[in-house]
Amino acid sequence: MARPLVAEINLAALRHNYQLALSQSATASALAVVKADAYGHGAVKVALNLADLAPAFAVASIEEAEALVAAGITQPITLLEGFFDASELPIIFARSYQPLIHSQWQLDELTNYLAKHKLPAASLNVWLKVDTGMHRLGFPLEQAAHAYKQLNSLTAINLITLTSHFACADDLTNQATPKQLEQLKSLQQQLNCPISIANSPATLGWPAAQEGYLRPGIMLYGASPFAAGHNLGDQLKTVMTLKSQLISVRDLPAGESVGYGARFTTKKPTKIGVVACGYGDGYPRQAKDGTPLLVNGIKCHLAGRVSMDMLMVDLTNNPSAQVGDEVILWGENLSVNEVAGYCDTISYTLLTCLLPRVKRQYINDLTQVKE
Ligand SMILES: Cc1ncc(COP(=O)(O)O)c(C=O)c1O
Image 1 (tube, rainbow, N blue to C red):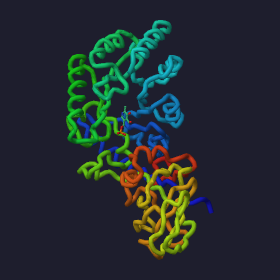
Image 2 (tube, protein in one colour):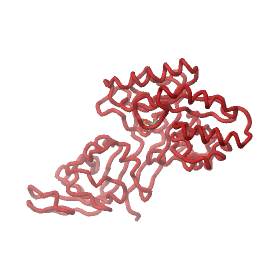
Image 3 (cartoon, protein in one colour):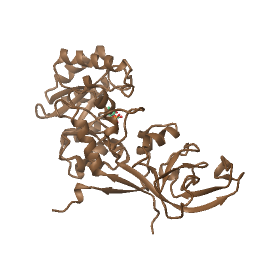
């Protein structure tokens, strides 16, 4: 018998979530963000299972794009950080990857490259990133029109999509979002080109931003981008269920401590279970006592510090629990958002930090379906 920890990934739920994103787009254009190994879900499986729905994908690097192409993905792929070095330009042109151009140094490298290499006219679509307030990547608003003109003057460049990223779209009352949107739209009117700005929270919660290419990420994986309940966020279906088993159960009298640093001490006679899952799998070590887990479907609570390969659970709520019982760390009936809240983090980190030693087990996988 193998170590029982697996991440079960429901690809039918992924497709449902993608379709929910798509249904928010007036133009039915939503590229699927599959960077960071599709937020820990396996980029190749995810992309192949969205291949008949998504018109395009977005990743963070050429390496991530190359893995998709090697698996047979033929849709356009956007590189969300553009290129890191001019040496990447030959492959970008060869594969028609669509780089974001976010800085003057990239624009200069691209211009130099095209001065030295004769490439067919209108052979590459690019995205021009504009800083509308996030202050991470992008040309300052007042320089964006000039950057656009420089890009547009390069004959090898075809379509230029104006893009920006929201800093606060998950807060539905934050007025920074309409301000960012207004800035991008006024630039769009001036330059008359397509735009892309909506991440998951904007796709679900800011109708005015549902224009051009939507760029949903986290929502595809079934985690609501909102801290509170939300009509659309609550329609997302869980994609990843991280599950393991109890590998040991013991009864402790009151006053005994559990795990490293003796952080948890029993207040009464307590049944303690050991689960095969730890920080060496990506489960957060900062999880607090009381972090929920489902033992045979019953909510129980973390007891003591998470170890590298194991964690301990207080079985007070499930006194009949025994070795071999299923434990859900997050997923079906236990939202990753709820668990993240006990770990002072967000769903994004729990999902993307799940390590490769956790076997991904795919269900409803279109790539496995035989005719
Ligand atoms: C530029 C860009 N667009 C879209 C996304 C997707 O965001 P989310 O996962 O919140 O939908 C990200 C994620 O970090 C991003 O960096």
